[in-house]
Length: 404
Image (cartoon, rainbow, N blue to C red; front, side):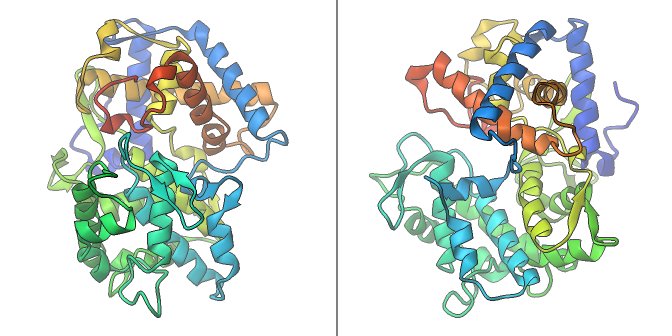
């Protein structure tokens, strides 16, 4: 058990806590002390070789962008954000606010879409799953769907508009209906309403009246000599958006978000969506001239592709094969164990991938390993191993099976 108490809320709401608890579980895996998964370190090299090969294939010059929501706005080589930004006239600060507005709303709408839902953009391109959700949310944002004044100031995500979001309005924007069902539509609308309430409740982060993009100004104010630690981004995201998540573990009246219990170490925080959102806010900050430091203080993301890569490559082997087929809940210990091992092993995998690519960690942080990278490699090996079950949802915390 870690020496840090499970009642230390400040610590649990940090990437350091995610990493420390994940590595504590990996240490038990190395001793063979876990109930659900066996660790085979001899297979880590095979996984690293696949990730390195996929990275070189996708980015021959090794100029890899960060793993973030911005990648999903590029469809068939068409960068929707770049096209929109090219026509904007505001200063750098306002463009950063707009990018915060877009990234936060789009990430929060990126839950599993289901197998049947499709989105058709203005050019008639049919999209599904994360890519479809990204473009649907992008188009809704661009049309003023989250703005108080959609006619004169459409590119905003304002508290009042978000607080008034209805399932009908969201369905219209996402082209959802009886013949094109979108899983969790009601929950998505409710999440946006809670986001609106959270903006109003934290004026120090989101201003008055509340706007998502005001978070940029709050973070800019923390920068010292034009630099900002990545941990400050995550701290602000967890503090400002923590109240939007319902029915989670609390300590001292504080919602711990994506944190779950494991008998071996106590509470295990992940903050997966918050960390992905934090990665997605790095580029807007850098675009405004603020250098983000310590990016590797954040962790790898314990999601379907990364965890699936480790299982499919034989690095992690379920002790009970029924784990791959039985229905599970997000809080089940097997899922918590798998996600924690994924976080810890991504650190080790990143070192091996960098060695194979001949790049230093300073210029090739974990966010680039993920993008290069582990997510694509996980997707490829899943398609090879389970072609009849492809495509699969990339969010294990919203699925009821470890693998499809």
